[in-house]
Length: 433
Image 1 (tube, rainbow, N blue to C red):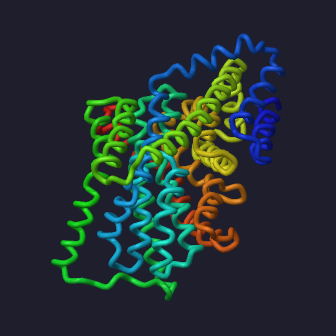
Image 2 (tube, rainbow, N blue to C red; image 1 turned 60 degrees about the vertical axis):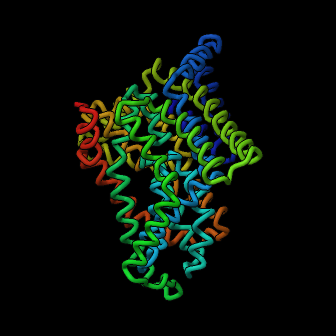
Image 3 (cartoon, helix red, strand yellow; image 1 turned 120 degrees about the horizontal axis):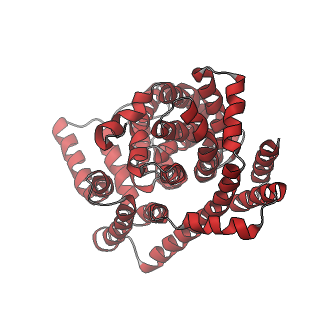
């Protein structure tokens, strides 16, 4: 009953619009009062939890995502995707989806992907006859790829909470992310055939197309090197995720100032200030979540939750279905950071009891929370996409729901019930058991 009231309090405060860190603070205060813990005992656990080198990568990746937009890197990534896919039916839509995936390989968050790629591609899609409502729905749903294609900030948080390898958690969502990208492109191909206003760039001879692709590749070479540097450093054993994130920030600054020459000190200052604000909010949230998690652990609440769900059914398929439903609801109410921090410590003991690998659970969480982020009625990322694209909710909700049902929900179920999809790469590269 106490945990039910605590979750109801937390979700209610989020729904009415209280800043998320203060929602977790209120939940922690409530739990502390119920169980009689002094704040002198609880506060040090919050400070201790933040003393982590792994967490230091989070503000750097947030900063790298902010600098991508202002330094011209994101623009060149979208141009590169358009050069390959733009001259086919639905090619601009596919280019937008692929651009979200590439952007995700640097920024690590879906909110950054929808803000950056949406701002660039929605006007461009409209020029090619794409209805604005369809563009908004597509960009919003495709932005979920930002937390599936590594590096992913929610996966960093998950690894921190569950004491797993950050690199293994990154790899767990790669194949689900690629599958979702492919299925979105296929659905887009069939959908645009129903929209007569959509035009296609005129076809050109093969030799000219090669020249266009070559020019876009040359222009975007420095942008395309950024994910190679980040992921190559991590999986090549050269750098830690934190060091790669710091290198990504330095790289974006140098490219923006000296190669693209679109970055100046005023824009840099604004990007750093925005990143600092976001990182500060995340740090405050992590502080209170750590306190809340300590109370949960001391009162064995995760074990109680596991026992409750197991009392409903001992069938692994049914339990995973209930967990998926819970995660989607959490994703509807919270952003990807908050949902990860709340659900990971609560549900991991249950996953271990029913034999789900912690790295597999990382992929289950990533896909479910991503779907929840764009699922009405709350749908924080879907509303953000609507604000950026300037479309009304009643127009873009129908195509968005279609993408969720035809693409995202099947990927969630495949990821949940086919462990090898998420465990193949971690076992191949990281040699996890």
